Each structure stands twice: as C-alpha cells, then as structure tokens.
Length: 394
Image (cartoon, rainbow, N blue to C red):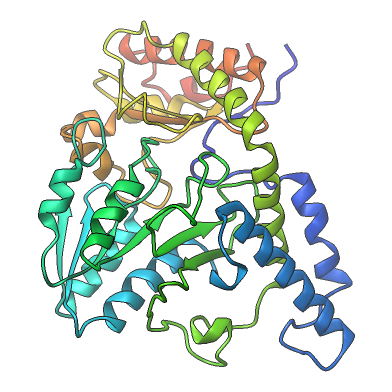
C-alpha cells in the first residue's frame, strides 16, 4: 500500500488550495502587483480588472449581480459586517434578532456583543436532527425583529437548513435575513435570484481557495442598509475600507469558478466516498450519526461513540486528520451537539470526518480500517501510554 500519511479528512476546517487556484494567484504576487485602487497607471488597472473578473465569478456561482459582492477577510468578518451592520443601520425599527443555538461562533459571539449594546437576541434550539422547525422560527419573530440569521450548512454536522422557507417567513414581515454559507459553496446550489436572502457570508478556504479572503453578498433590490464596521478610505462602496488583496481575491474567484463547473460531478463522487466510509463503520457498537443523514451535505460524517476516554482516541488518531469540534471552537466540547440534546460526554466523544476533493477510495478504506482498530484499542484500554500514539504504517 503506497499511501501518504497522515490522511487529511478535516475538510470542514479548511481545504487544500487547488493547484489551479494557486497558479492563477501567483502572477498577482510578482507581476501584476499594482493597487487596484490606483487607476492612473497600467499596474493598477490590471489589478482592478482582475478584481472585477473575480467579483463576477463569485456572483456567477450565486446567480447574483457582481455589484452585490463586497470583499472581506473571510466569513467571520462577513458575519460581523452583516449582523452588526444591519442591527446598527436598522435600530430605529427595532433591536430584536433571531438565530440558532447551533450557529458558528462568528455568529453567536457577534450576537452576544450586540446584547451588550442593548439588542435582544432569541437563540432557537433545533430538533434532534439539527434542523429548525419553520413554525418555531416563525413564532420567534416579533414586531421589533430586524434580523434573522441561520447558516445554510452547519459547519459541524453538515445539515442543510431550509433557508428558502425561513427567508420567506422573514420577508413576509419585512425582516432582513442573513445566511452564513461558508460551508455551502461548491456543495449545494445557491440561487440568489430565487432565495429570499438579503445577506450571505462567503469564504474561500472551505472551497479549495486561500485563507484570509471572503465576501459578503448584500442584496441591492430591495437595498439592504448596513453600517460599515471597517473605516478608512471608503473602499467597497463604503462598506469595507482597506487595500484589496488582489491575489487573494483572484483565488476566491477562481475557486468559486471551479466549484460551479465541477459541482455536478464532484458532489456525487464525494458522497460515494463518504458513504463508503460510513458503511465500513456503521456496525461499530454504540456509533450514532449526529444530525439528519438525509438533509446533509455529501462530504460530512459526524458520529458519536460510546467511549470512556474519547480524548484518548483523538490523541491516538495519528494516521488520519479529523476533528471532534469546529476548528474555531476553543472549548473542546461541541455546543452544536449539546444543542441537539447530547450531554457533554457524548459531545466530547464525537468525530467530525469530512471528505474532500483530493481524497481517494484507497485512503477511505485505510481510514475506516484504522479507525476501527483504534476504537477497539481505546475500548480495550490499550491507548494509555504515549508510546501507543506513534503513527502506524500498516
């Protein structure tokens, strides 16, 4: 067996940059390095054209207008701009917001900051399958509600929320609706011409693009009023000041272009790999899938295991890269799984395995065999010594 270890199966945390994306970015580091805001010479104009092209690629993936795309440093900044920006710009209408307990920390922590500034936030619990009930969401909307925020694809359990129905409920009452789509691009179709969504957060590094670049979709008709959170120069229609990183933006545009072209073939292939892995693990005693398996993106498998020392198992998984919670959560215990009704032990004894573009059947088969062996070792108490945690090559 000629495998390169460890095998990377944590694509929900970040993805490798596709070589085609890196190749497209390189000239904008060494040749076309002009500032896209410098319109008085060719260097700047070349950079500006690249930025415009990338803006168009992002808009194409969303079926949106290029003028509705605002560059940011990533989904965390996009969430902050969308939520804080909308709350502050519309506070004369109300100061109530609605979100889910299972949102990314970039949403939840932003909501908590707004609570310290006089806003009221309702945090809804989803069902045991991770999905929010439409009637529950509707019931939480009040006359003073100005914004609802629900992620399209959950970053831990991969479930797909019905944002079309949730957005329609908001639009009926004149409430803005924000969607964190960081985990969705390239995995599910997104059509802003049909979706009743006003604001959408995006990032490159979950879709085989570079870290440090993202975008916020802000609907132009009807126009969404936002208060800028970054000041100094008035870039991006005054919504996000700062010199544009042309090479990063080019990378975002290219990875979204590739995603749009390859999604029809890539999603079924990755789903087959995910299901191949699950079929080799599903008979393990006490293993349980977290969240709906039916309304779930193709690459995600999140399971809980009945173990006394799940942390010992995680330390022992030296041949594969997986996670037990979101990369952005420093607590070590999944707030998402606890919101689904799991106790702290069950949430702690979980594995998030996310397949990616560059994984192979050979890797999946090895990972399944390796996982089974390590789980059995953990249950038998054979993983107590640090000497047990060296990588294997069998």
